[in-house]
Amino acid sequence: MAIYYTTIFLFINSINNKMKKIIIVIAFLTFFSSNYLFSQTDRKIGLSGSVQSSQFGISLPIWLGEKFVLAPALDFEYAEKIGTDFSIGLAPRFYFKKDKLSPYFGLKLGTLINIPSSDNTIDSKTKYDFIGGLAFGAEYFLGDNFSLGVEAQGNFTKSDKNSNRFGNSGGLNFNTATMIFATIYF
Image (cartoon, rainbow, N blue to C red; front, side, top):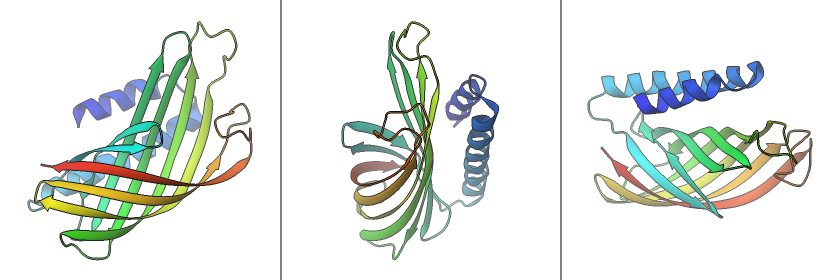
C-alpha cells in the first residue's frame, strides 16, 4: 500500500489543482477503506489483473463487508517521446450472494489522464477524460485465495476538449465493454 500512496503523491504534484482534488478524494477513500479493512480480521485484500480490449489493468479489491468490495484501480502506460497515459479509478461491487459463484452489481468511477512528453512536438496539452458507469459480473472462487471473473459494463465518458481518445473531443460518450480478471486474495 505504501507504494500505491507514494505513486499517487508523486503523480499529484505534476498535475493541475482541479485534478489534484479528484485524485486526493479517491486516494483518501482508498486509505480509509484499507484502515477499516485491517480492523476486520476476517476480511481480505486482493490483487487483480484484468484484460479489457487491449488494456491491462491492476486493482486492489478490498472486502469491506460480507457482500461489499471496494476496488481502487490503476493503469499506467509510458512511451518515450510520446507521453504517459495514467488511469485511476474506484469500483465498488455489491454481491448478491457470496458463494463459489458470486454474481455482483458494480459502479465505475475514474479518470483517464494523458500527459504528453516534453519531446512530443505534435501534442503538448495534458488531457483529462472522466468515466462513470455500471457493471454486472460474477466472480468464481476456485478456493479461498483465488478467483476468476467476468464483467459486462456500460460506461459514460466525458472527454477533454483536447482529447481524441473517444473520437469526440469535449463530448459525452457511451460505450459497452467487457472485462475478464483473475484475483489472488491475501
